[in-house]
Structures are given as C-alpha cells and as structure tokens.
Image 1 (tube, rainbow, N blue to C red):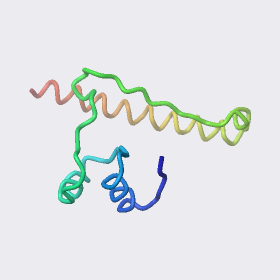
Image 2: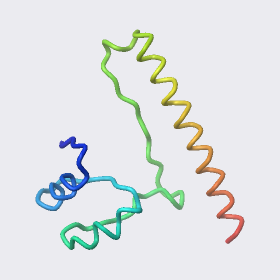
Image 3: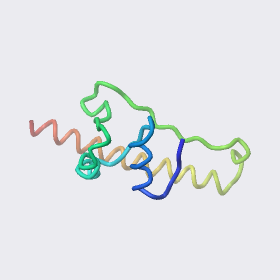
Length: 96
C-alpha cells in the first residue's frame, strides 16, 4: 500500500507496479494520455453490484469524544452525499 499526497507520484507508482488506484472520472483523460495505465469503471452504477463503504479506526479511539464527534460528522456528510447521488440517479432514470 502507498499513501502519498502527490497525485503524480501515485500515477507513476501504479504505472510501474501491480498497484490499483481509485480516481475521479475527471482524471481519466490525463491517465489515458500516459498510455501506461488501464482504466475501468467501478461496478454498481447500474445497480449490478453494491460496494460497501466502511469506516475503520483504532480501538483505542473508540471512546474518545473527539474521535466520536469526527466519526459522526463523517457519517452525516456521507449520508447527505449518498442521498444526493440517489436523487440524481432517480432523475436520470426518469429521463431515459
């Protein structure tokens, strides 16, 4: 596993190893232009596969008020975003 804040380092690493990287769709033209990386969409857009999203944290932070607060806010933000995407998918289905 590699963790880097540098996007170009991540792309170069994927191009030179057997690593896998998740990236936004907006990056596809740039990634394809490198010619070194194969891309494929994630399954699930059409409802064929469900991808579980999980939050992982160390057990020593389980009872920390600060960490509990952060986890709750992350869950609320994710739920809000998921509702947004679900509504967007419903609108797209009605326009087909």
